[in-house]
Image (cartoon, helix red, strand yellow):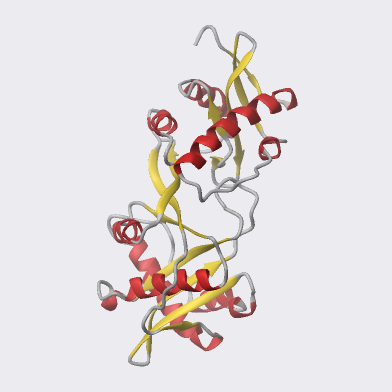
Length: 294
């Protein structure tokens, strides 16, 4: 836009950018109260690399991003705008510096204007991040996991990988050797950040779930929340209420232990997960949008 100046994000822009982020997040909280509160908006942006759009001396939009070995991403606080259309210009200015083919961005699910801007930059919807309140409940056949469940856990991990690699997900997730999976799960039951649940039928473990106490500090994670990071059942029990029993029990455990929110995320192309978790009352908070540069 000819009347807009695009310049590098710097400390002099922190206060104005934080004000834009505050306004965005307050609108988000009005749509979904179970989000982080008492946010230090300046701290969310300090030290970030990016660009700003200034019109007549007023900061109207900002975009900041980070890179990993494999991709570039815009975090939960990474963009806000009084004029969302300006984010398209900011992306055009910033993206070449990332030198990555894979780009992802996290934006509030309830902010239609922001989602539309990124859709018109050729991004597509990849993940839904969601939340709901815990409620009392017990899942029939569900119990706490224990180290002796490691072999069953490995079997369930293979089932999960097979499910994600199938159509229409076509995930690039590679199958792992049994020993690798055992090493990854070893110690889970002694780590206070995790709570493992398994579902037994006729003496056989046919499903499991994992609750995980995430670190706070970003806009997604409410205080006093826990993440339902994994729910998997074996193929032969899907559609029989096994997954529902695990989620019911997980929500009940979170309620019993005083948590006020349960977070979760899933790939939207995973049709069963997308429909299953929405049907169990999880409300979208953020969406992860993705673009692979040809």
